[in-house]
Image (cartoon, rainbow, N blue to C red):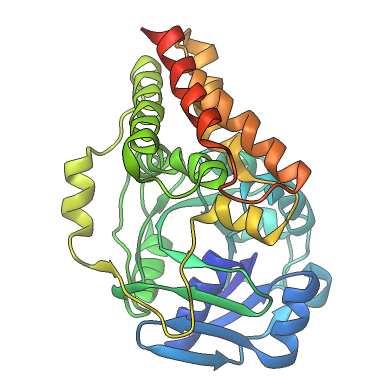
Length: 337
């Protein structure tokens, strides 16, 4: 199979780079300065086992490649960019007849739970991937992944449920490429579990590292709102104990030479000054479900709005004053107590 990564940032660059390292046919799809750097020098990938330049082919869009029946499209952009890419790639012709949407599998290796629904409107074969992968992309052409002995844990399954031979092959390829890749017939349950952990992304992005009494209390309340909403919606997901048991000590964060690890994906968006952020599809998912099931979600709603304003206004990551963080906690108590 040939893997085309639609988005070559932290997640797409790391997974694509690791597959390339183990001998798989990989193409990265990128844009702007990042694409220029990939074309000029290759992918600069830093992991605990060293830094290397990988000559992974990079393109700017579907018009630059002839699609084959054995291609696998892997969507690795943030959700706010999914629709544009899906619309670009779904109608592209595939050698032998038909379009990508009709013939090719599409894997959503993304946070949130909306991407698979968006994809299934355009692609007949959609797969989910629950991504637990501590990785960073802040400079053009460069990505890093700090996990060891494995770079990450990537649960894979068919959407909306089930498995098939492609899932098994994808798992085998990833397992041979520095990942654990458990096959699951309930991949969306794992993605809802990841959604709960991603609710802290917005808090970290606007308020800085989640440490100390105030930020820890906010983080706990944000998750409480999320769990209450999923319970009201009847959505099941693996327990924290099941998740810890599956991950074990397989992905331990290690220092990387020449790389200073910052925050998660939302923090990285603010730091790179992208002008947008994924919070509408993380905390915003909880807000949506809360409104549908009459469950208050004041903290998630406030963080959704704050992080969106930070992105639009170019405010520095982690710069929300302590008094404003304390006011968020007071807001939660007034509405939910």
